[in-house]
Length: 413
Length: 66
Image 1 (cartoon, chains in turn green, red):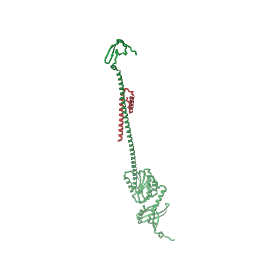
Image 2 (image 1 turned 135 degrees about the vertical axis):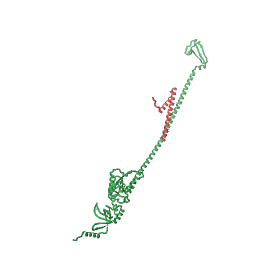
Image 3 (image 1 turned 90 degrees about the horizontal axis):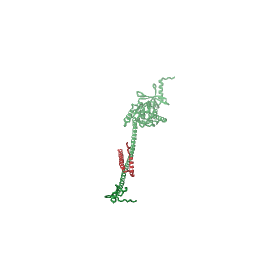
Image 4 (image 1 turned 135 degrees about the horizontal axis):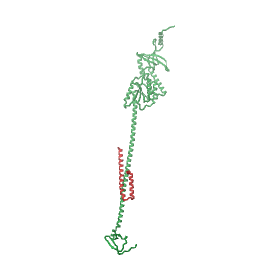
């Protein structure tokens, strides 16, 4: 039986591999682990999974002179760094070292594959959200007419948060915003979970907020994968208040942007959107007030005019009434005067008649016409029974004659 | 005993009854004098009332114009 030392065996393996394998292969794998050494070398563990179970595994290395360029180029292409969980297509040569064993030496990575892979995964997440019927839920919420109580999910040290606050505070109308910051990690592996925790914290505070703003910005353009995370997107979509995003990136919208109520490019744009909402509301108030003012003024003016007409009518009627009353009183006065005058004439006439009658009865008048009156003892003879010898007095116009009765002859009627 | 203040209507009615009375001729001349005096008072009172009403009307409407 031939015996080999371990080194001899390993040398045989190495020789066999070198002889039978191609210099390089394009390999599809997921980065299971990744760490960079001080030296600048990058050490990875590549895996292949089936139903979340690892079914293949291999160590891999990217030497520093390759890694320096490759990592920068990859970030530029895909907007994210090489990291755990990423699926890559890499060009690798198989290395076997007698002492260190088997590993892959990665010489190149096809960024387009990762881009395509990400697009595919994004689409999967979108499809899942849509099939669950939650994709549009947040968009269906109504934005409050006046949104002033705002929960902000951000990193407090982010430049974007500072921009957001500054923009709100210098708003031209001096609107007051009640901002509550909920700190969260906005990039890296824990970002999605951290943002979800902040959403839950906000949710637990009840309905004291009008809406939620998720902002990030001023940092690198990479590491936006957390915003494509299914769990985070599902939480945003089903959140009971409108969620506004201002994640601050140039590349395609993240899924968080797609499910948010309103997607804005930057934190500053979110602030402007909020201020714009208040400005629009104030404009509507002003317009409403102005319409109300004009309507009211019109009504008052109409009423004033109709009142004026009524006043004038009233004045005319009253003046007429007074006038006719005056006429009536005046005519009463005239009536009275003429009545009284007539009465005086009548009375005067009556007196005159009486006067005339009296004049006719006056004996002087008879005397003047030649009649005389004879009295016996101062009384008319008709009342006395004169006797012969009685002295009688005869009254004439200018004379008074005294005589004695010498004969009495009685007249038979 | 205070006499109830005579209204314009009362005054007019009294005036009319005086006229009727004189028209019918059942008034003594002695009585006539006092009736004429009374009529003059009534006419004066009625006219004063009308003047007051007119002045009030003018004042009220002028105030409204301010």
